[in-house]
Image (cartoon, rainbow, N blue to C red):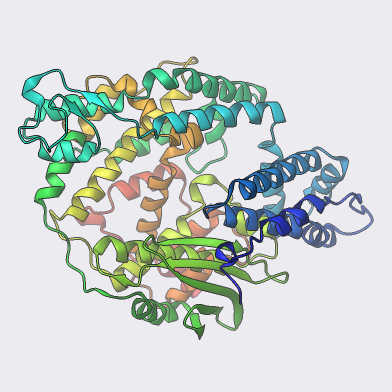
Length: 555
């Protein structure tokens, strides 16, 4: 039951990297004389070692490593990436794709889609090196803590400077300044200067990234990168994403430079503090309604069951930061899952208990996938539907374990603000990656005002304010979209008597149904993206307030 090897006295990295560098991708051509179901099982057995090594490397990367261990981990990552790229370009892999093409099995069809996704996203080593270098440079310059804002206007100096601090400079916490400064114009000027801190330094990096992305889109036959990335998503065009983002734009009348003062003057939502072990017992009791069982092996290990099926183990560690760290992925018929869950000794704040619910929901989702293929359990049909199941479970647990934040509380204000920030940034990201082929649809000055009720003088700095724009790009909207879909599903089905059936349909999904089939099953009728956006937008209308959809229970 050793599960915290990363903190052991002897580093496990050298042995793991040795196994990594000895791993060889399958060289035997798929036997065309055999049926594709047999070939699929062969494929899974051939590559399960690769998947496990890759997952374990990602697990150890989350820990502080010595310089030597970091170098070994990087060496392993480069080796695995190169070997995978060669395999995806091999005749063996192409024969595998051909073998699956005519199979009518739903799981095999779904597996072929995941395989095609891997093949489609495979780029040349030169392309990846240029992209990753530019992304790393962008992130590093944006996250630099070397901050020193000179305030030339004497009226914007804080009246009570701390001892030893220069009267005309701010060196340290931006949040502290924004909270203490009573003059809104001063707060705005300092906030805008902070947002512009990386614009000049990152122009070259961002230009390189957008050029590489545009090149990738053109090679795939698309006019721009936004079209390329959205083509196979639930929201499959820029226009549909625009419709969703506009439907979620609400004026909260709190500018970013005023947020700190609003939070400082607001009360916190009250929760009953409890030990994390006690809280886990309560969570486990609620999960029984979904046929999920927690079996405590000892105080640090939980064995997780779904009905009569063993899913795997959750290993508990104590840490101030709440997090889950996947160790090994469940694959039905191949291996059980392993996940490390880190919790503080006591959950005393509202936000802590909410984060704990999110962590448990994510852990249960990862252990409950009901597929016999690794790729089906780890790669979703679309990026913007990948986490709907975990978010539904999170809302389900929130309703059982934690009240909604009090109106006007810090938590409620922060939730409203963070949603509008995602909405605005999503508009910026969509426009950035379709620039050059058409003018930006969104007027960023106007859209900022629609969300926050104030004017940002230099919205041209917006693309340089968050690193996700160079990683997620035009898919930045996906987290907000999935939260809305999951919440709509939960509210529409929470009155259904058999909640375990919803869990089986949405989370386990043993038949590997598409998201469209799942939505039709749970919501009672075929629903495409545009009608679903409208339903979500008007879900709180008095005439149509979350109608119950339990017809699937009769099937």
